[in-house]
Image (cartoon, rainbow, N blue to C red; front, side, top):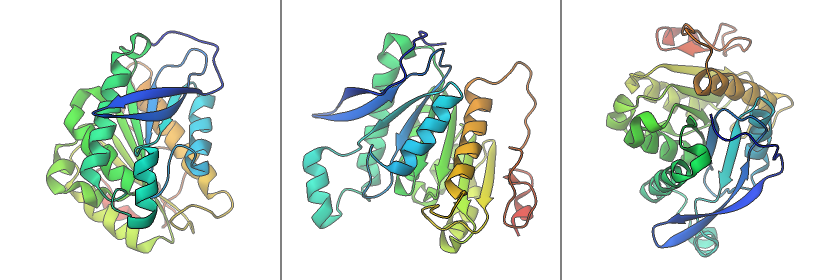
Length: 253
């Protein structure tokens, strides 16, 4: 476990990544037992209201969070006009890797389990980085993600337990996640939030995302001894059954 601390307000950190520095907001609840890094979606950053809501939910169950900008201010300004960086999965993945290694070099995080939460295109970067970093990443959650952009080879090599969360009305992204799910050989689950669209803006939709993510990370970042693998409870898929597990993909329909 990392060093216990009473810190609750985020502290701004500066993260060296290659020849640039990225800025992030690090929040460490007292007695935290895991740390989740956020990979934001296209055109978003550490101030994303949706990811901040998820971060608060994780903090409430004793998990530290790091929301950081995958792009520098200069890159963001270019991206606003050209959109050339937000879909540069190779760049975003390298930034995720560099940030993870920086975190693990900090004394208070050297023995703390690390998780990734990815949204939209950030999910692909999180999944690729998790596959490359192997045992350094204990769990991954994707919200409305594009795991297909990681590619079938990467997905097949992924070892970290992974939860894919998709809105029930986000039909195109459901199909992309279904296809990606087939390639994954790790412990995996797919949860569909009924009637939710891509941004989970419907009343109660993001709260369901928070609950699912908190349950997944609680289980995998500090599981109780001898815990048996089990589906995340309390949330229905589009069909009203339990969310998908690796052995019951057909329950989606």
